Length: 50
Image 1 (cartoon, rainbow, N blue to C red):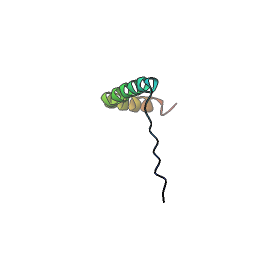
Image 2 (cartoon, rainbow, N blue to C red):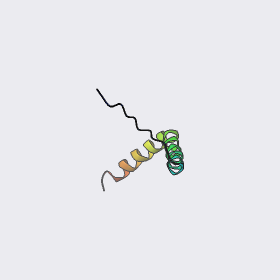
Image 3 (tube, rainbow, N blue to C red):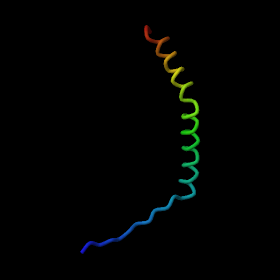
Image 4 (tube, helix red, strand yellow):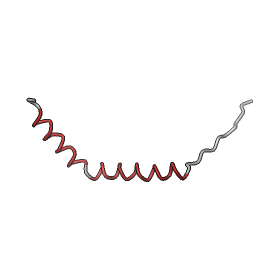
């Protein structure tokens, strides 16, 4: 017979606060993806011969 013990996990207030910040960074990255991509391409083109 298998022992079906369960563990419960809960996020702490500190973890919740961190999740909010990480979500904000993710949202920013998604909203600025094209700008970041363009900037990377410009940088790569400018530094290709360096």
